[in-house]
Structures are given as C-alpha cells and as structure tokens.
Image 1 (tube, rainbow, N blue to C red):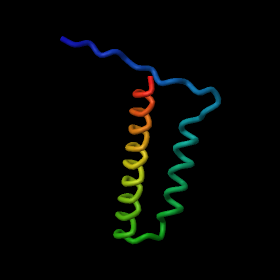
Image 2 (image 1 turned 90 degrees about the vertical axis):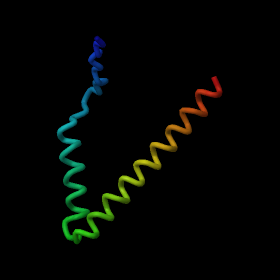
Image 3 (image 1 turned 60 degrees about the horizontal axis):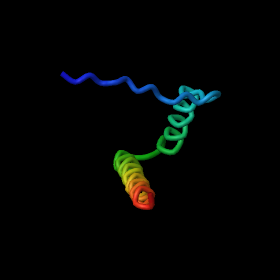
Length: 69
C-alpha cells in the first residue's frame, strides 16, 4: 500500500487568494458579458490554447536548464 504525503502549498504573506479569485472572475465577466455562445467558446478555446503554449515554453526552459547542469 502506498502512502501519499500531503504537500503544503507555499504561504505568501499578504496574498489574499479569495480576493485574487474574485478579481479574476470579475475581469472574465466584464470581458465576456456581451458575448454570444460561439464567442464564449472561442474565448475559452483561445485561453486554453495560450495556457498550453505557455506550459510548453516553461517545460522547454526547464529542460534547457536541466541540461546545463
């Protein structure tokens, strides 16, 4: 049987995660409130595409950094 360790997230003093979440939700609402269903689908598709590209770039950077060591 495998035991999983609980990983505690790093605490950032002064960072209010709920306030941050609400700010992001408000920003998304303001950007999308007048969009049609098709526009909403494209908005979120583009956002996920941008996120995946950012992750690919970060992975490539980690691999370059690891190969330098």
